Image 1: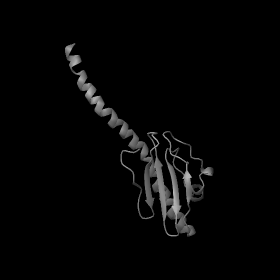
Image 2: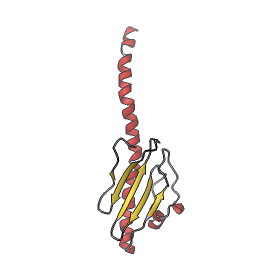
Image 3: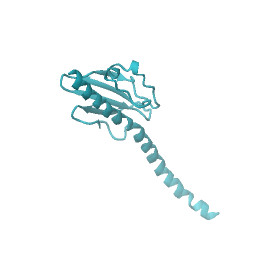
Length: 138
């Protein structure tokens, strides 16, 4: 019985290390939705411009990111509907596009931990999505 109690502090220490790392890993996995969707948006923007000689601006949709998934309603997605782009399934992130005559900026926001601080990704015609906030913001 003494050996059972002797290992308890070790288990407690391992749990204290492993559980926060596991939670961070879950947040990173959920946050990875944002750059993946942004790559699809980028492809749609480039294809649309090739056919129509103009880029499409898109207001933030959904309006704010969420800790839980939100339904993507194509008919309410504004410029994304014009691009004929929609994600595969529901989303946690929020996406927007601003344009000029020769370029676009896609912004993707995430708040999978629900703390009100947004992880922000940015992509352009020549740059793939990159995280511009600290890596520990989810």
